Length: 397
Image (tube, rainbow, N blue to C red; front, side, top):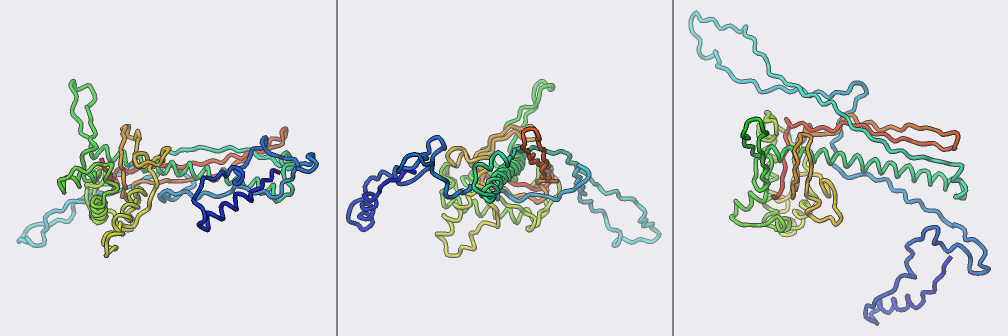
């Protein structure tokens, strides 16, 4: 083991703490141990230089990752594969005969009024597995007792669980991202019939515009106050943050009333408050807390509605820059390729999207020739979007 005398360093540090000297540049290369690979390890004693150092304590880096994505897990079922969703349209009103009675008129009730019912079927599933091999006999020589060996094997299992959590979380976020893309496309895309008619229509998605379910908060703000705030400055502008918070809160009430405006399918839908799922980008949620709550006396008047936060929609990039965390860049299940910057949040019905029939299981194979066993950690699930349910996107474009 390498032993370094650091009395001079701690003496100088003491003077700095007591205010006797200015803060100086310090060489910490002999103070802080950043660990060494086995090939670089100083593994002999300093006395006779022949004795091999022994490991005094073993610490396993074992932390179970809980994930951090919106909870959209639905019920599971054992038999069958199809998820069927049945809905009924609102029936029309007819003239009431109760107030137009006339002598000798036949008021027959024997007319059949057929309800208008539709059904959607979701019958797809994704699957993947994580294989990992384990040994006991071959690795026993590296540990001092059974507790250390069990700790090592437990660490490996935890690493698989964490990997599974990360992968399932990413699929959940992509389920939300696909719905964002479908909603933006339907709300902001204009198609012009092609000439000749045999060619596909020419469609353009204008992200500088706004619609009732693809809500461009920056567009609305600039139009309302006749300003030219840019998206780069909007996220830290207190006036814009106040306006955005106000607008999102309005939509919470609007979605609770029945309407055809808030879903791609144009169906009559309403989403009660307890079935509304609000997910906001952390950058925006923290900006609302910081730039609003710190300046107002009646803080309950400017609070965002109850929500969950996500640090990004698809990934953090290499720097966690706002442009990276707020962008949704997808080719949707509907075949639309979109790059949507500045997505601040979504509000959706509990039934608009979800993860169905999630099945996690482990199968094991033992190899008697090489004396090891392999666990196959498997995950099956269906990830769905229902475009007939309410879903609203808030962004700055």
